[in-house]
Length: 254
Image 1 (cartoon, rainbow, N blue to C red):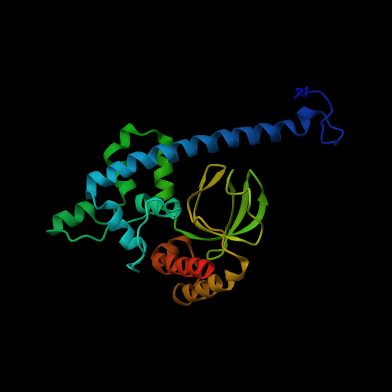
Image 2 (tube, rainbow, N blue to C red):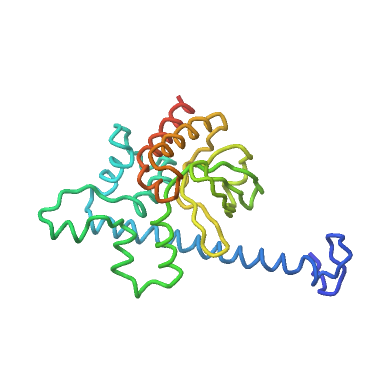
């Protein structure tokens, strides 16, 4: 493709010079894409080391123990080849607070209320880059929710609306946006790192618009207890939110 000169007419047809019109937009898109790729690399690299750290902490039964709590002790069988792992594994690493029995109060103080990612961050703080540390901090503090697709740019990303909190976020999502359409709903975790939004743990299904009333009903229930809904409230309601996801999943596929 021929390079456009800075002083050439902008190809958008505005009549302005390229440098005074779309050049800056293209540069911003390029820098955003570079940052997103760095974040994806960090995500993939941390996934491997955090799983190892989890096994070091909790032993060979790590996956089974985490799955039992993730599945809300529903009797669902763990399948290491299931697409559900794209949602379950990030939850295990960044959100799971193991329900174990400490031998004494001192043990409880050392372990309670710490995710695998937080434990790894504490042990390796000075070995991690500032970007890696911030990525972990953002992810462990971000609850799971239902996100309606407001707008979709296939191959690039979405504009999403949190159906429980009401906030909106633009996320870059190269592959997941290929077959998505406005009105459908994602269940997962969305973070904002500087000017880049991205999904971390995301369910392997697109929830049909017909299930939005179920989500709205849960939102009403949360509001009855909490008043206005903030992101922190979703952490308290995590099990109920995930239970609704399982219910919707089962109704879609049974």
